[in-house]
Length: 153
Image (cartoon, rainbow, N blue to C red; front, side, top):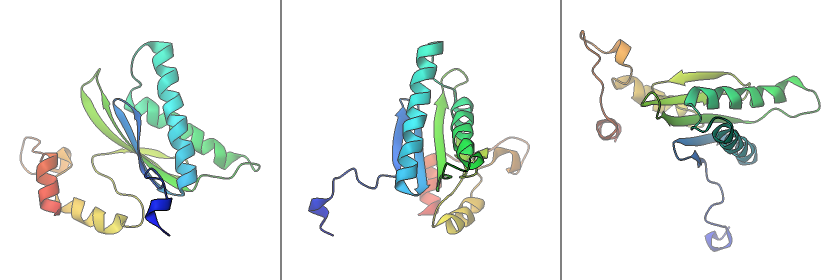
């Protein structure tokens, strides 16, 4: 297939939901686009209703409920896409990473991998001190993003 015939945005797997939130998808692109559109609608509706940005946990829970709804009804096909939601909460000044599985289950992570190369990525992440609760010593010692990328490279 000639790359000149395909739009530059075709096949994108990382999307912006709002100024403070982003979504990465794995699996079926069409299902992922539907999830991204729903996440954007949820962010807009929350902002219009409450006058503030949607908290990361609330966004993850609403997307999770939406995805889970499709697993409950026989007339609807379940989604074939996993979703990683990275967001910043200005109220608590905390970053967070949530993964929503195709079943509708959501978990918060310090580092997560999904998709085709998830196992090698998980192996490399386990070598890093990402989780402050499991870091050695009395204090939580974490590495920054630049150091993590250098170690993974």
